[in-house]
Image 1 (cartoon, one colour):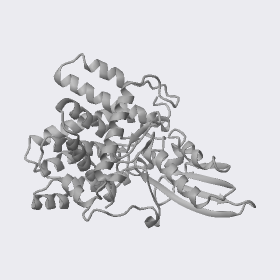
Image 2: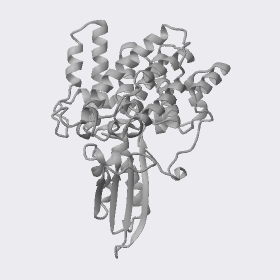
Image 3: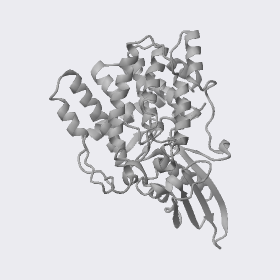
Length: 400
């Protein structure tokens, strides 16, 4: 299983699979064909269907068109077999002879893959890829999930997570300080600062819930506006984990070290899902984005509150289980409606999953690994109409 760095990628929104992934692919292709005289890029399936709303063309053109003329070709009804988010890059020389053709897929979280996955797959650093096995190892050795991360990752992982945490906090603060209408044409106004201010008028539980909402909205609105965020595990679900951790640090005064350890645990659970299923909305629906983000945040919160390995696993299991079947149906292909609101609700649900789990001894019937398996099966059973094509569900014409 790959490093948790693949779960926490720093970049600009609004979409890890539609913006960060295509940009990364364009950079790789340009490096190999720096002497090309023109490029053609064909976008397929879900990547083409919602690409304009996700700024996919802009992400590619910002790289390639600065070098030579580049044409974007849209094929939203043609789905390639490997993954719904397909791209074909073609380079041409001075006499218009094709130099290279490269088909690559943006599989979620900013990662790239194709049939020859060894070309783009990261180095495997974990010897176990199921939470059940990892939990058994932790119990046998008297360690926590974050200590397993520390054992497997390179020594720079804590510096990396420290940077991730700084970007997360900065994104929240920037989002809270920014007002106005989000780009894209839907006329969606930023709400984070309003929620933050209104929360101060309540006491205890209501105030805390309002603050969690405001932090999730802040990051999600920054993402929708193309601001710098951290995938956790994707851009579209980037508001959940930061909201939970920021709120707990602000209200419970957890040390930076404990926050980073919680981040490590969250990343481990996210990496397990990515390895065994998917975190791509185009592949498995929003259950793979917001659902996984909720599971990651629930695990992180449970660890901060002293949960056992079993309680942490249970909290994560609930966070994902209760998002099973969630479709990915963004209106106009924008990561705004219902995405932003879903981040706020998932952050609150993560907090509830932690509380529920801590009332138990951690024993339960359905394991996290089983829910991951079910999520993958469910996602593949969901018709493509409801997986990031902007043609079904809430995105269907007339629903807004």
